[in-house]
Image 1 (cartoon, rainbow, N blue to C red):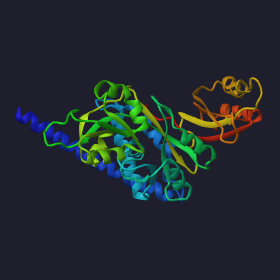
Image 2: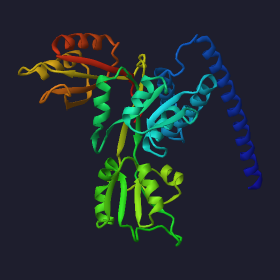
Image 3: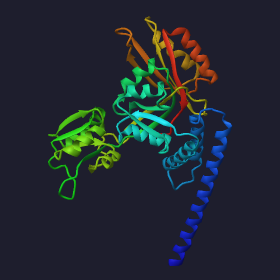
Image 4: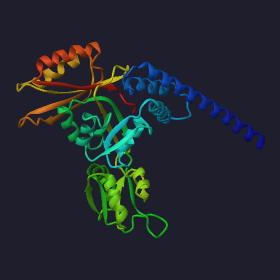
Length: 360
């Protein structure tokens, strides 16, 4: 038995050496690619999406596709950093789900810059203080993030990628004198408004008498809970570690499939990757059937829509903008034709960007 174990460990050591050699070789080639780009952008979302997609499709197991993606994105992140550190603005402070989205997509070698609000994330890229911004746009339980939609209409930034982040809410509190964390004595629960809404059924069952207090971020809730022994907060396990809290209960969200979609915003969008989306916003003429006429070119071209949402226009009362996500790239021939037809019919049309579709 000992000899068998020794032989298996020797094989693992050999594989680890091979992995190190191959990763180093990959990094060296990545540096050569960087030298031949002659100033071209370092982050190529369409290229990275193709790499991730190919490896997930060819993954023989036993590691999951999600784990394989996480590993390759960290390798890509480290190789990218050899050329230049990528600066990413996100809705802070540290410990938020937005920061997790940055790390999931760009890896830990990117510089994550915490911003006070979504407006500041846009401004950081527009002024050159950051290369990209990662902002939440919708949650599968609570719907659209209105501020992101409002800002993207007037901003010059383009959507160049998207991130799907499963949201697992954790209930946490300050460390108490007794060893095991429990619900005992909790009289208030802090959390971002969306987090509180995503956990309302759980809170109704387990903490029906506790006051629920909305805060600007779950990290702010963690900071407050760390100072109040009779309080708890919702948020990520990363926030618990960051603020010295103990986990009372993990995964307290009401919907097990709870997911937030984030947008990556930059100065330009992405080239075709082979599996893409295009986001756009349009306004209809004030005529009967005008919305149907706007959408007709998509149906005629065989382009499916994964999202259609109306939002009040800021320009005048009782008028609406329509946000659409199509499963096609703006450079695809059928999409080019459909957009030309829509532009002729719409009161307003803006293509917000084309980008690779994220893995689920």
